[in-house]
Length: 334
Image (cartoon, rainbow, N blue to C red; front, side):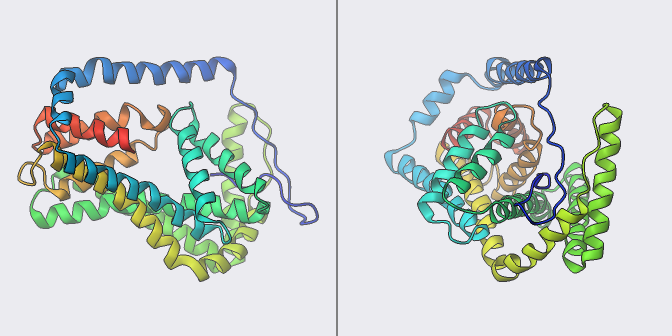
């Protein structure tokens, strides 16, 4: 997420230029690409892996108890997002958090560039309930930062677990090394920002220069410096994180792990045993596909996630029809 472009009146912050919307042809091209990916995955690739009739039959073979437990795990996952939002925005109620979570997720998963619209919708809902611009901006930034850290850390943890069980391949280890480097670098930048105002100012100004170089190449006007905004962010972050870092970290971790649990339970209930695909392999597949889905190719990663999870779980040893059934059930529930 970018820096807040405008501050409350009287704060002395520098206003920055709001980036114009992309041309119509770019938006149409993005929509066409998304549609092409979805059609290719669901119309050609997945049917080539497993017959949809067999997949439906596999899902229907789940017992009533299995359906009920899978639904309960999915509900637990849905409920896990509210505490994470409440942790980054003091004063937010559970049902308010539930409305924000469901509305922003619905937009993010259905609209092109939906993630950006989801953030904007969340901010608008928070503001409509009387929360100030600064607390809302800080909450959105911290939620994004902590989620990125979790996405970067999970593949590393998964590879460590796979290595101890003897299932890690060279490709996974290499990807994990990249993940460790990215995570350490991100943490170092955050630590530098929080440690001193001078570092925060320098990092913000450096980021502005990099952005402006890119904007110049596309004949866009330069934006204002991020340094001042980052200094203000530092002051407010130190206070909130100092009081709530345990709650923020715990709730974000739980929300990610319950999402893994939905996938794992779906696999076990359609008949994929631990001997075929271990829980460590499930975690690794989830973690790396979660990173892949961050690329804004399709809304909510539709098609990308299904294809990535199917490929990873089948490569790990899962029966093709059962894997496709579990992945589609998981995606329908989440």
